[in-house]
Image 1 (cartoon, rainbow, N blue to C red):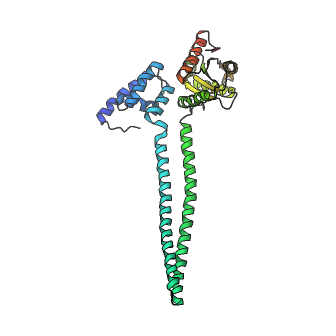
Image 2 (tube, rainbow, N blue to C red; image 1 turned 90 degrees about the vertical axis):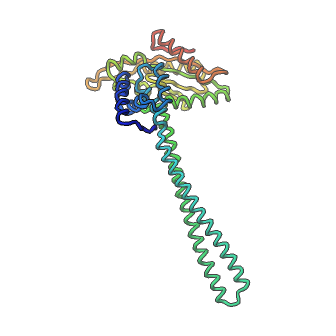
Image 3 (cartoon, one colour; image 1 turned 30 degrees about the vertical axis):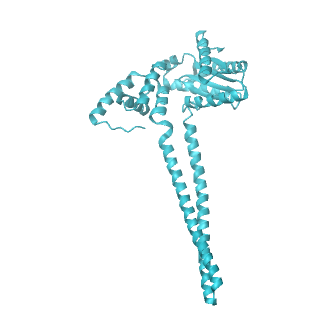
Length: 341
């Protein structure tokens, strides 16, 4: 997250530019959209501005999905504050353990010295009173050592619990950063991570990795006719159809961008990927979106799909490009169909 050091006059100028940009594009008027356009207009985030220019080529409308990705990647990546807070807490726990261990080590050194002195006292003791004094010192040192060891054991036990909690918090933060909040499936970041890992395993095992790209047909018309709330309902319904259509727990489903979804199918040949995509297409076609007030069918949904299976020299870009080209062919051929590359 960048710091904002603009003067009142400069910030007023940036505000005017920001509002103009927000009005020019389709993303909702919310704090995420404002933050992205403000930092771009102010010229304080070069990486963001370069990404904005690139995004204009792929999504000229700059919708909510693009804004969310830009915000997450360039304005406030992966809950940086949460990660920093967890790291600080972990450092505090480790510091506490180190202090307790150092204290116990010091006491152990003192205890060893006391035992050595006791041995000398036994050797040179001439009277029972001298021996009694030496024994009293040993008893006192033994009690201190026992208390210190118990305190260290308690501190270590508490530290283990705290570290485990922090691990879980960090794991949740990482996982949340990979999930699309609207549909509950992987987002683009999660997809990119998964496809690289799955391709590597495919190279190692010699088994194919298939990719299916899905796109909701005429989705813009849904938003234009019924509004973005209805559009969100359609996205959620299609995501659920696709998720239930994943035949194997090792498959992964992601919202690739806007109304486009992508499925990763490890150990799956092209013909099996086509069959899965066809099954999902039929399930989506059976969807009926109801008008909740009238309990009448408001609209139906169709999806198009393109599939591709990995080849020996593929990287993620070439594999996705073939599936995307197949999807384009499905769209050009009349929609509501599956085409394989």
